Image 1 (cartoon, one colour):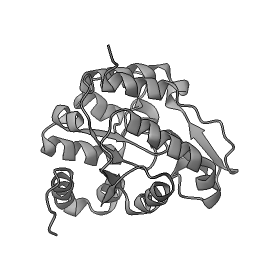
Image 2 (spheres, rainbow, N blue to C red):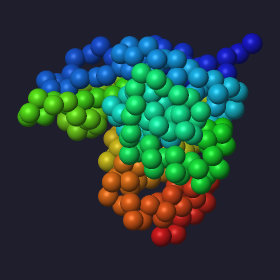
Image 3 (cartoon, one colour):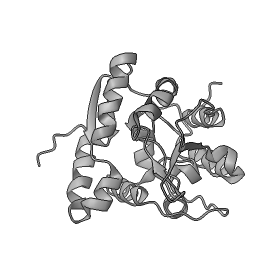
Image 4 (cartoon, rainbow, N blue to C red):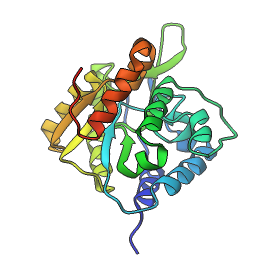
Length: 234
């Protein structure tokens, strides 16, 4: 009997390990190694929402934040929404992540988590959290494209990760990329590795929630129309 989509994702996450050298001041956080409960709630999530063999469309983020998938193991999902929306409590951590707020508001209007996850798979080309030490010695969220040397260090791993994501059972004729700068780099990877067909670019949830909150409903409408392959007219 073949593995379900969810079982394939769980196996992918269990094997995640990045050991290559990074530029000074950067670190990779692997929540599956750092917190045993992350593995538990991640398995519960994928067994609950992906216990089938349906083909799904791919929504491509940047890389997990420390307070979202960097804790829960579920992209764009902090512990608050993991429990309140997905019905999966996490006892060892309590996080609030603004991208998660937007995504789950959008998911609610789309039709709810069950309907949304039946159609879409959300992950990132670099599926582990990256942090950067600032001048005061504090570790902050970082994006894989924040530094030229960092991108070069993770590029091969990203291409491999994207191929592994696709092998789970994803449509490749088009993908939905979150973040305009992210899309520029995904386009570079796509030109080199020939992974996808069309890239449909949407504003990143963090950008919307942080800088465009007054226009949030417009962006939710844009997301839903785009994800349903309908034409968005600003």
